[in-house]
Amino acid sequence: MKNYAASEVEEAQFLLYYIETDTELILKYADESNVTIPNTLHNKETLENKLREQIAITITEREWTHPHAIAFLRTLKYLDLSIFVTALGYMLYNHPKYFDTVVHRFWSISAMIFLGTCSLVFASIIEEKNSEYKELLDDFLKNKLFYQYETLLKKENSNLTYNSLEKISFKELKKELKKMKKEKSSSFQRINTLHPKG
Image (cartoon, rainbow, N blue to C red):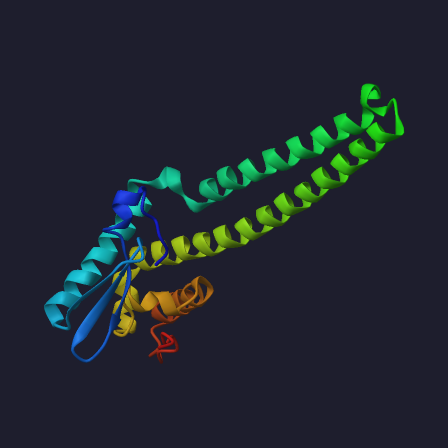
């Protein structure tokens, strides 16, 4: 699960996933801290309930923080900066006051080159951020889909949990669910094809 915590304080309590060993469960939190607890059935059930609860809160109470909105607002900040820098360079270059002498022309053209480079850097940051937010969106939609169809998915695949969901893509889950619905409506016996990569 990706980090959907609303604040730094909440990050300390926001569970991303856990790693299971024979004797321990290593919990990974959004604030990058780790906690180790004994590997018991009760502890695993408690962790699954916590992950389910986090998804429920993200889907219902925080619909306004949907990754689409987050991506748009954060990218907009970089876009505004890029437009400002380009406009500043254009104004410097075209302002007659600064083009009286060769020295002024040199500094203005140097400023244009510098500001143009800054614009390119900001554009690459925007592209990188959009890629990050696409991952966040895919994770959000995958968790939402699993939350909505949890009973059906777990009935058909007992290995599927909120924790193992990290190893499956949104596309795979969507495809599997579509197949399950089709097979259920046609009353055929099905063979499980979805295996979390472990």
